[in-house]
Image 1 (cartoon, rainbow, N blue to C red):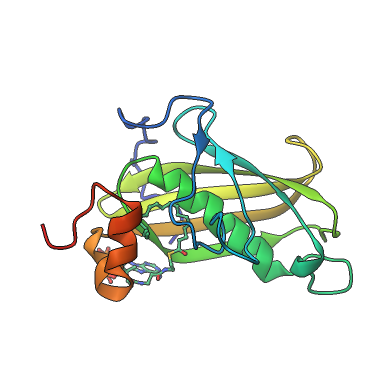
Image 2: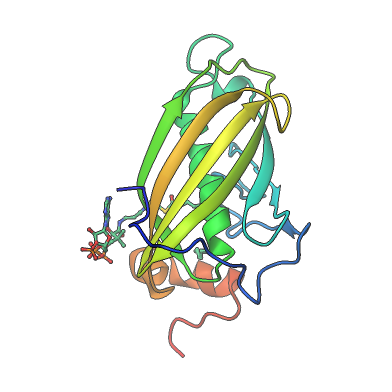
Length: 179
Ligand SMILES: CCCCC/C=C\C/C=C\C/C=C\C/C=C\CCCC(=O)SCCNC(=O)CCNC(=O)[C@H](O)C(C)(C)COP(=O)(O)OP(=O)(O)OC[C@H]1O[C@@H](n2cnc3c(N)ncnc32)[C@H](O)[C@@H]1OP(=O)(O)O
């Protein structure tokens, strides 16, 4: 379910994708993954090296423990979800996570800097097929976490209908709930 159907072309950068090397801001200040105003969130900040993929660093801290001095797997899965979500946003359409598969290959001690990378293998209709990995200590360090995901394209209206329309209008000025 997270593998693109055969014949699906790998995506090309969107014409309005951020320039290679650009930092990607938060999509919502209250987001648990990237929100700058979240009191206990992961505060992941990322950049795109090529307008197609996303790279970020996540320092595992004491609030992220599952076992003593080891990262909680659910926190690592959240970090994967976040960078994958950031990478599909490069295509300038809103998507939500439909399915997220995570492989935990190595324990991740508190204090580790995880080097995260996410990319898209293909888009077919409303479905985007994505992957991510988290490497310990360096961009070419050992892979501790791998993820594969199916994201589903939605209308911006999805977030207004199910969530907080005013917050969306406040942070996404190009979006009007009642145009
Ligand atoms: C200020 C606020 C800002 C708001 C955000 C605005 C914009 C976003 C901007 C930037 C984003 C940037 C970064 C994002 C960072 C982090 C990302 C975090 C992402 C999340 O954390 S997001 C929360 C968790 N996520 C959900 O909250 C989804 C709940 N869910 C639903 O809302 C529905 O479930 C939905 C819409 C997914 C589908 O519903 P639907 O009715 O539209 O469509 P339908 O069911 O027909 O599915 C269509 C085709 O997808 C297949 N399909 C669906 N689900 C599948 C599954 N699980 N496995 C395998 N296949 C699946 C079907 O099988 C069918 O396939 P087929 O067409 O072949 O039959």
